[in-house]
Image (cartoon, rainbow over all chains, first blue to last red; front, side, top):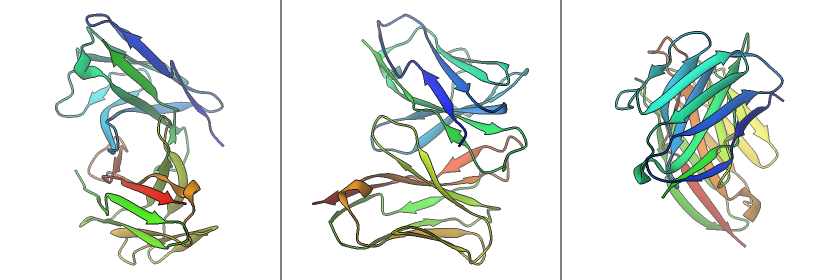
Length: 117
Length: 113
């Protein structure tokens, strides 16, 4: 099946620093990628929709300047958490929809656990 | 935005018992997906149901899509400790033009040996 890879899988950083998380579709092209945030034992909360070659669409309540999303190619989207603070600590997950694929089916990355000290 | 109500949110059972997880909405979905997620990992797609009334089986898991395509259920027969995890239903938000997937609240299942 289609593979989506996230990197890093975990990261620890100091408060005030910025952290970049990469999401790659390894064996397919994805015009659309989605970024989610997940707290322990809770469901996924959609943060933004990333479209190749255009600006991301952010969900209500998600700060655009705080969570920078770039989708520069059909296989790579990045999420940068700027000036991270302890409250940004969370599990971040990306997903991708294949070009021409079933509208409802997404393939998920392994997730990236961010811990801000 | 369409909503998916998933229940129960937490379930702790003994090995060998049966269980059912429900996913309900007041909106029609063109399809619904079920995912299973283990701690520290991303969700893994279990099944997609597309046709109203459809029933799909995956070993001991049975998935059903309601006739009106507004609800779905997941039934696990003779649960095993390996079934422990977070189960999520999801559907494409038809009110959005981005094709974003909306999720139910999730069901945390614990199967005790």
